[in-house]
Image 1: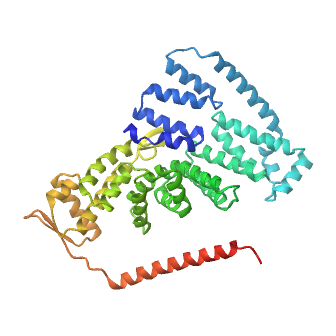
Image 2: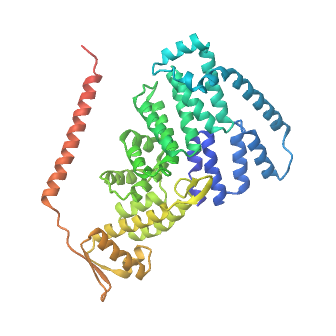
Image 3: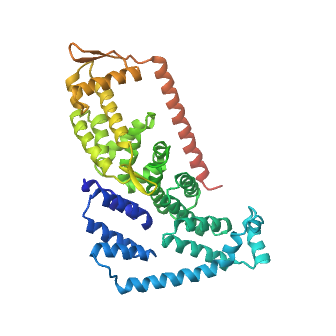
Length: 437
């Protein structure tokens, strides 16, 4: 299963602090040698201010109570720098801790800057110091303090680039504190900026979307409504194009969301085309399962892939487990996935067969005969499927499903309306892009 570990592909698109939860998960699952994980942690920590944590990892790795002199010296530097930044930001921090003083702030940032300068002698240097202090706090692992200061900094900052950087930092801090509702708000706020912002090059905008999607994995597979919202984000044309061109491994998570999402979406058929198109650039058991069922109609292959999918999910940091109150606990996503995967196989198989042998069907669903019979009975009862089970012959008989002409007409009309709207939008964009005469 180590060959299906996406951490090496995902990590370059994350803040280094966001990589630690992934390494913790991999260490718990023992997917890689413990020594390799510990060395990766130290390599990450060397670029942060979490010196005490690095010392602890060093002791565990080398089984010693001694730490290198450079770590001790680095700790002294960090403490001194933290004290200096705290002193520089102290006037503004003191102001922000005074509820009566904060009430003087308004929505107008320029008014706030002038008021702070006139009444409290707080100028641009102190505001910049607050940003640096918040950033340093984040690097030290104090995510709560960093999130508070970055929020307050953004309320005063007039530099759009620096404000955007602070928003990325706050999003990372909220993710690391597992504040999923707040993190989702910050994610949506960041998406609006990325989609509306004028970038120096389209490549930079694409890269920002790729980072956003990678960071969003933490939220979408922990938030109650995340498995729907990941489809809303990843399946948008601009984001799906970014996935196909630069991050095809994200197809694993979009495919999983489509499979476990009980509301079958019209976009699913189009997504299958993407899976078919991208299977030469990226594939894993989850994407291959969809290709087996909907592209190749290879039900034996789908059965084999379903077993592999179970292992992939268990060993994926986002799909296998989530963090709750500091401890890893099992997520029922695996059970949802397998249940819906069997449904996909059953529905597709039944479209091409009128009479189905229960033994054959049980084998393809990866169930024993009794489990398969019970599963199909419940499915017929709950979904009002036009099928009957003949217990004497051990077969499932499918009733012919003749298409409703009126429903077909409505579907074609809706599709035509959507294509017309898209065509008009493209024409308007082309006209607006033409230079004025």
